[in-house]
Length: 294
Image (cartoon, rainbow, N blue to C red; front, side):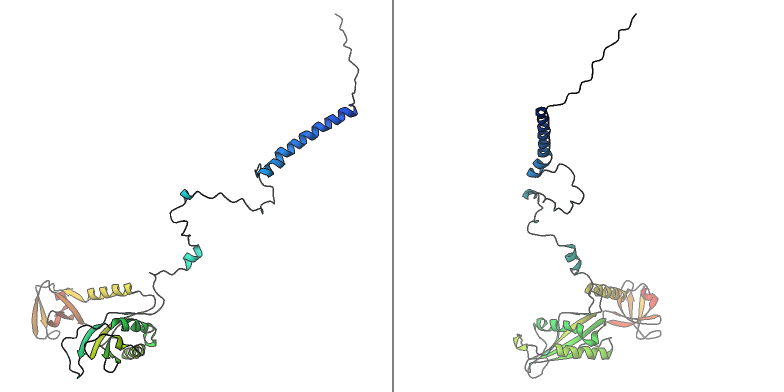
């Protein structure tokens, strides 16, 4: 079988005419223009981000976030701005111990009163001296003799309305050193200078009013002092554990002055070797330590 040879067509090259070439160029330009409008111009006009920022464009200010609706705000957030961390860190804590000496002054107790002749009276009534005296006595915390002082001191304020005079005296014997007591009394006298007695309503010419002052060293609060006092008071009390506790006039072989039954509560006044000086009602004397469970 004879093979028929295929006759290829001769290669022809067609060159566009100048008119056709211009038409093709116009089409390409039109497509490029549409691409620019869709990809670049339109997003910029309407503020639409169509892709990630280019490197180096991070210094551009970010767009402001839309405001939250009013109903989404927490109550009080509009008028109560949150305190900054720096402000919160610098605010003092009221509960924290002070780094200064403190003097806590108790209410005054009228010890005595006298008439113009100097006669001591049985009924003294009331005298509103606290509002004038207590703030001044609280300033004793800065007294040089009270620096680092821890303890209590009772001062007597002798008021003489006829002479418009105030004198500071020691109300009760203190366990504090006598030099410290004298120094504090001197400071108290200076603090009470110029007190306006004429503004006080009074019935009698002279009064003596006692004030207890508790000195707290730096770092101690009144609550700490109260806890210590409770511990001391608890330690200063005991209960008779024997069937009968013999109370003697003196320790060891002293005369028996009372017999306290089991369960009697006593106040411990003093300790000496194996003996305790106790007080129960009007009875005061010495008992053996085991009789009160010591």
